[in-house]
Amino acid sequence: MVTKKEQFKNILAKYIPEEFLEYTIQLFIKHPVKFKISKPRRTKLGDFRANKEGLHQITVNGDLNRYSFLITTIHEFAHLITFDSFGWKVKPHGNEWQMTYRKLMTPIVDSTHLPSDVSIALRNSLINVKASSCTDKNLQRVLMNYNKTSHLIALENLDKNAIFTLSNKVFKKGVLRRSRFECSEVKTNKKYLINCLAMVNEINYEK
Image (cartoon, rainbow, N blue to C red):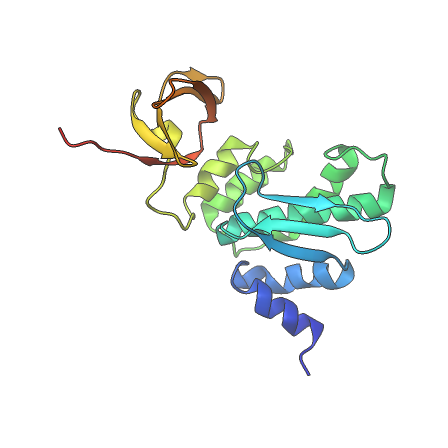
């Protein structure tokens, strides 16, 4: 008979670095949750939904690289544990969540199993915890080095006026507005502010 631990291992082995499987599985066993691997979402990497009457739910995007998937999963478990400890009135990314997130992440950053660039960026991110790894630009830049979609490129690495596709639309890159580029949709000339680290597909027209 397959144990619960083996079930979790069979599911998570594809998404979590092997060295952190045991640690992550123990979180699932200690904190029962309805866990879903989601299709890619532009606006979030994962989420947590509390349930008054049954199991809480955590979803994580299935297209993330292993280190992003691990960090996002820990992020969402921090929400779950914080909610169970402090209830509905707790702020989503307040002091209680930050304390819980640091506690859960410490064994990971203290290990010797992370690539050195990920370890340094992750440790630095814990000094001033952001709402997500997407908010911490330095951490996101490092994690992007391990993305599965090698044909895509970060928008900030394209030249000005470069043409690219994103979400089935064609854009022209414009000027930087803080952390986003003002880009024009080629078809409508409508302006969009796009995250500087959005992964896009550059179009190289032959002259």
